[in-house]
Length: 134
Image (cartoon, rainbow, N blue to C red; front, side, top):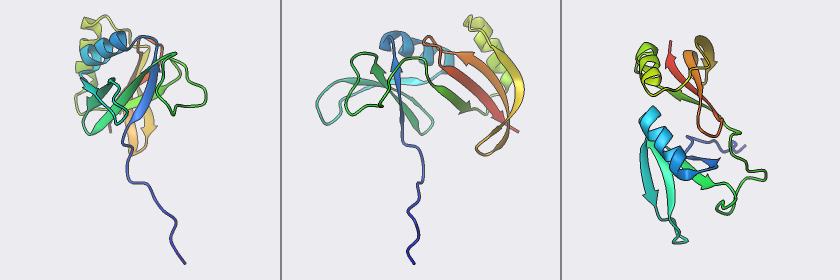
């Protein structure tokens, strides 16, 4: 009997945002991601945020690229990012950037096991979790 196919990794995800420039500025300044302009096969110009081996593609609300999610809207995501940087260092960085930590440090369970997390929001209200593996 043939084995069912399996997935290996998440290549990218898409965030629909109210303002691409504001989002790029926040994620590069506050989370240290790299902004990358790229040109897909259709010849358009798009923005992505890169970190580690991951990428977040950005869609401007009201001008999304096709195909797109069935119900696009800015501020509907809940994302967890893993970091080796100790959370107290992140807390100091967030304070210096005037970014409010809504909760944490608090113990949670991630895909790989126990994590310690800080929660904050991006300009669209997406919930962001910055976590250390325990």
